Image (spheres, rainbow, N blue to C red):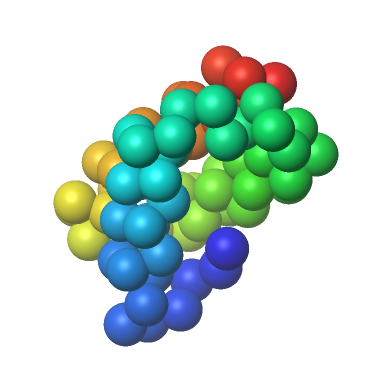
Length: 68
């Protein structure tokens, strides 16, 4: 996951929706979840994303860190 203007909102909402529909996903692939959590840290720090994406990324970030 990286900042891709025009797509970051779509990527963010897709991850958020998947985790809401399938909360077991982070436990299925812990290494991938850890890698994604690190990328989300950087993306949230960089800024430049919409308020909705920031909120949804924050929720995804929280879920990923709770399952490490």
